[in-house]
Image 1 (tube, rainbow, N blue to C red):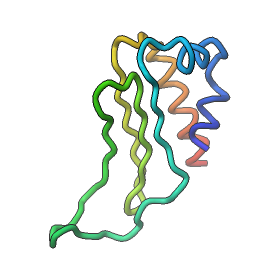
Image 2 (tube, rainbow, N blue to C red):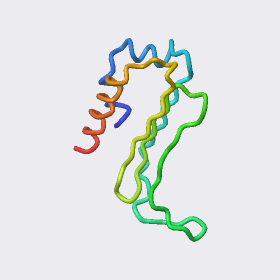
Image 3 (tube, rainbow, N blue to C red):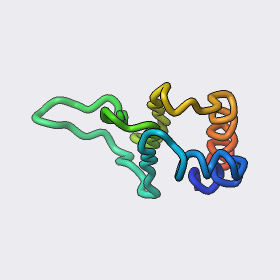
Length: 101
């Protein structure tokens, strides 16, 4: 749903740039699998929250993860991709609103 909302909101030229003309690789990681809704622990330590982080040498990395009824969106973008940040934020907010409603 999130990717569908973003794709619908972006102009075609932005999609072509991100997929074809991007000077760096683009990776968008998304899942429709709901995260754990109950608290769990690792090695006896309670997990307070889950976050998603990108790795090096990726132009754009977007993560969407849920845990205990809360959702987080993480974005890591390299300045070399020279994207329109206000437009990207607008698209993310629009897609998030679609999911929430």
